[in-house]
Length: 272
Image (cartoon, rainbow, N blue to C red; front, side, top):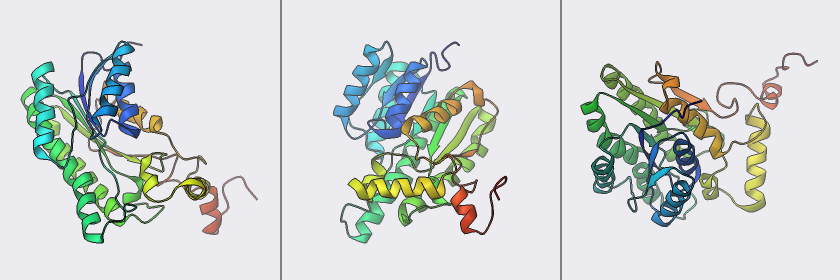
């Protein structure tokens, strides 16, 4: 099969680790020139070198802090200056600050800035360039926990809910201009997000418990499990899809796991 993103330029935030990193790898393997955005420019340069060594095209223009409008604008301007366009925005930057020992007000502010404001800053730095070309794909990252939480993360989940609202509002406005906007709602994915909540055996117990009781497929996901749907939204495979908030969590969020069915007093089909 021909590479699905050949000749396209993708800006990926949160790309120095986790889901964003695996998405950058996959997009590059499908022919896109990827711009690796993240605060850890050392990790970004390392990933760019890896992709380049594999025959791909990648850039890291230094630290990208989505909470800073000037930082985001700089990355967008450098991308357009070198490549002339941005075809794809994958906005994966975000985190929770619940485990950093901050006072509640500081933790609230930092979580909103990183997840909600940061997504807003990134999207609206890119949209004018897409409008000018009447073409583009925007992928926003929410969380299954925004409306189907497996563990309390009040501010993080509230901010992710706002990202879903942004998705549908943008999709409505931009569809006539040939710009598609979709959202991925990851279920429990093994990334550094969970490091803020637990560690070691406690973390493994938490994840295995969630997988057993909340996920019909019986396992927590990986970053690669999210990169695939991101490729779907970035490619022409989703040419007639916009405004979709897609659960990607092994069935979590919209299908009862067996243990949930038992708890609710229901017997799964085919079991007596």
